[in-house]
Amino acid sequence: MIRFTIFFLILSFNLLAQNGNILIPKEIKTQKQLAIWQAKKYPMRFPIEVYECLKHWMRLDDYHIFLRKKQEEFSRNQQDLFKKVFEINEHRRIPTTDNQFAFSNADVTPLCDNNFRYCHSYTFIQTAFNRLAHYDPDNFFGFSVPDKTNYPEEWFDFYRKLIDDLVLKRKPIIIPYFKNLYEFSDSDPKIINYLKERIAIKWAERNVNFFGARIFKSVKETFSKQESLELYKSLTYQINELHYNPILWLARPVEGPLFQALNNGNIWIHVMQAYKVSELAEDGSYVIYFWDIYSPQDADKAVNTVKIDPNSDKFHNAYSEIEQVHGDRITVGKDIKNLTKFYEENPKYYDFFYSQYLERLSNPPSKYYPPYKGPALPPLILEDGSHWYWPQAWINPEGLIVIPGNEKNNLPKEVKKVLVKFLGKKWASNKIFDPKDFQSL
Image 1 (tube, rainbow, N blue to C red):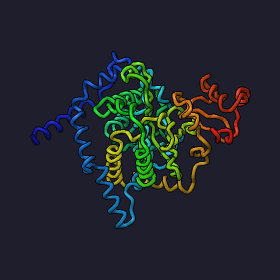
Image 2 (cartoon, rainbow, N blue to C red):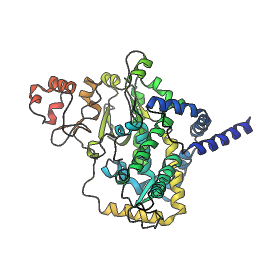
Image 3 (tube, rainbow, N blue to C red):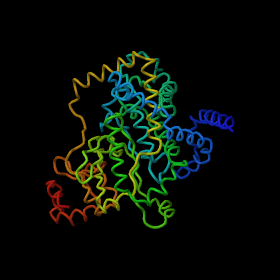
Image 4 (tube, helix red, strand yellow):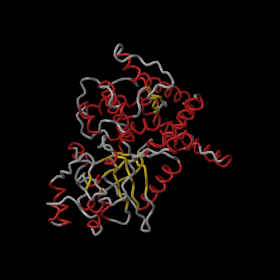
């Protein structure tokens, strides 16, 4: 039995390696068709997922191995293994335009008409670039890059292989002749379309699996007080102690039959990376700061906040589940293993990019995009939690209600009605508010 299991796992790994570069067939036009296509391939992936989950559950995977090494190294010589490999790209953990894709989650849609959007895979791959990719705009290391004018196909193949190494194999890469992710993802139509296709395929892989069945659980359960406290401890530990942004799954409860809601697209699920958590208040509430994915040109508008208030019945009606996505820690374990190996085998790369990190510390850029510390709109979210605008809205320093992707501030009628209800008719002629107006809501 053991021999058969080992043989099956080896066969699965080999088949998946051979199928890794398969792209979306031309006959697939919708996200539902994409899900069915992936479901047919899933049986070969299933034993590997079970194997990885068992290792993680038994604390024998890379994530837990490096956690133990981190504790040993820190007690012995005060060296933090997680900080050492992640700090070089530390600046990419907060919303900045440079470190976003130049296209939004919704822009992936023309590839496959969407039913659910691509937030999970978009966030997953953006986080991978910000953690594992390095940029060499002057080609300091002298990579042999084909000339784009004379050899356009070879030029594209060079960068396509880098994308595949990162997305398919979680290998650290160096991207020559580009300064950042935004510039790279806006550089050439072929690169843009290839990135979108990888995002679409990764969505199917991340959602169409045994663990993707969580949707049937997520939208029908209650987010408990104990779960909210456990989430707080987990997030603060990962963000502050382990130096990476966890990826979270947010769901809202649905009314009526689940399959009907699925078929009609009336289920609200969103996936984002959390990059900051506020202090825990005396009543047990706290705020999670998310890096959202709807405003690639304006990262300061990509900040999304959710207040976790375990004492509020309204909150429990607004969210049925908020938790870390399946496999996120397993992926982090692979990343730290691959980054450690990458830097150990290429000390010149480590020295070069670490020197840039030190330079950033001594000469911070003139404009970062930290989260605005003014009030979010949780009371309005709770009052009209069915409207998707509320989780993405906050009051900016000028008193404007800001919603990512809505730079002109043209709010829907439903939103205006709620604002008038709470703030009075003055809103009809004036979009500027004193934040104090919201304190009593």
